[in-house]
Structure formats: C-alpha cells, structure tokens
Length: 327
Image (cartoon, rainbow, N blue to C red; front, side, top):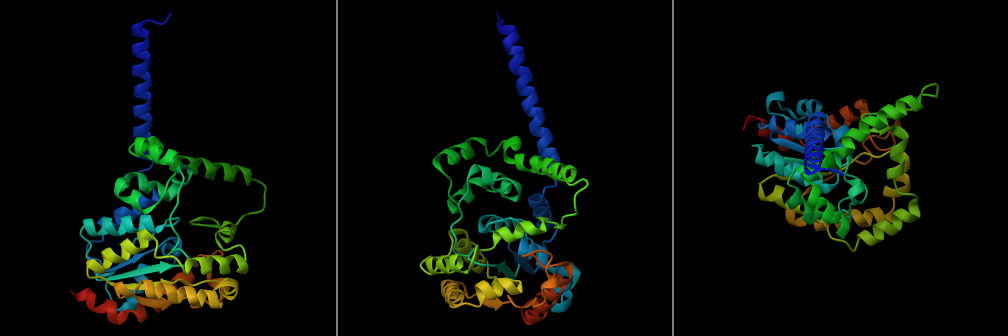
C-alpha cells in the first residue's frame, strides 16, 4: 500500500522532472527561427524599411543588396523580418513586435504569392509547430482572433500555450527528424536541400493543376482580405508607412499554368481594389527571374536570384527608400 509520504515524494519528483524538462526545452529553443527574427528586430531599431512575408521573402530579400541599390547605408538600411512557413498571422505579430521595439519604418515591402492574401487561416493543434509555434508565445491571445481552431484544439491551446514543453515541442522533433533523415540517407543518392528543407517538397505547396487553381481564384473573387492581412495593412497605414505589395518571382511553369490566365488577372484586380483604402503600391515581380536556374527549388530564389531580385526592387524603390536613410 502506498503511503502519503511515498505519494508526496512521487508527486514532488514528477513535478521536478516536468519543471526540468520545461527549462531544458526553453533553453534548447532559445535560438529557434522565430526568436532569431525577433532578435533581429530588436537590433534594427534604425531601419527605415521593413520587409515582411513568408519564406519567399525570407530567401528572396537580401538586405545589403537592397540597401546598396536603393542608395541606403548599412547602419540605416532595410530589415527583413520575413519568416519561413508563416501565415499572415505571424507576419502581423512580427510587424507589431517591430513597432513595439522601436522600429519606425517609413516603407513596408510585403511579398506574397498565389492566394495567401484572401485565404482564411485555419490551424489544428498539430499544425502549430515549427515556426507556427510563435503563436503560443508572441501575443497568443491577441493572435487568436485572426485564425480558427476547433473547439477541442482551442481548449487545448488555452490550457497549454504557456507551457514550453508543449509550445516548442516541434523544435525538438525537428532536430530528431533531421537526425532520422540523415541516418536514413546513408548510402542513398544525395537529395537537394536548402535552408527550408528538401527542395522537392516545395512542389507540394503549388496548386495541383490549372483547373484547381481556376476554381480557387473564382472563389477568392468573392472573398475579402484575410483578417490578419487586412489588419497588417491597416496598422502599417495607421503608422504612416508607405506600403509596397510585391507579387514574388515564380518559375516559368508556375507563371504559364497559373499567372498567365484570365482568372489570375481577375484575382489580382480584386486584390488591388481591396487594398485601395491603404494606398498600396503594387509591384508585379512574378517574371523578374525568367531563368529558372535562379531558383533553389520550385518556389524559392537561389542566393544569386535573391541578389538580382533585391537589386531590382531596390532600384525601383530608390526614390521611396533612399531619402529615408538620411532621416
């Protein structure tokens, strides 16, 4: 029979183990990608230009090349706070984080592709790992209004969002998965990878086919901006930022199948109309990387491609950006 003393010691040891695990996970994830981006924001208070978006902007926007092309200096140049595998919700939170930590940009450059500006953000608890984990620790209750969870997942989120071993569980499993793939690849042909993962995996993020894309575009013509997108542009506009929306470079096959179509033209016009209240400048850069060798995978620009894109956007926006460096 278990005595009260034995039960008490068991509970105490279990609590100590859980506490130790939480401290360990918090320590191991202190340099996770979202936290590195947040640190970059804290270190860039003088930046007059802010770049935001998902992995296409994270890979494609080279701060130093942009600064040089726009006539800016490194000490007062652009800051790229784009985050791979992020939704507009995380991007909104990063904008707010930058503003809260003293960045006062006069120009916002926001990159997008496909239908992300109008797609509602829906998550399950299983989705909220990796870079999405920042939804647990950066303004978690504020962010909840911009994405949907099931009732069960919402209850789980409310109960566990402040527990590191739950919130950052994906970062630990990422390390395990990298090790597993490394071991599984021993003796196998080398697979192309980049900073975001296996290159071939990104073809899965493209539309299945032209017909599916047409249907999605036609449905999106009846949709408003996603709530997080609308709020991001509203807050940038209220902060007196000039906003530039960039349709990111795409490979030849993506443009031919999807962007060189009437339904994409209609969708683009729909987006422009939705953005009218925010005085947004629209830049179609989808064909700026006409040579597919400038891509590292089906979606992301290579380092050389990113340099060419950043130089061109810097020159294009030089009249907007360069005067800011002297302020």
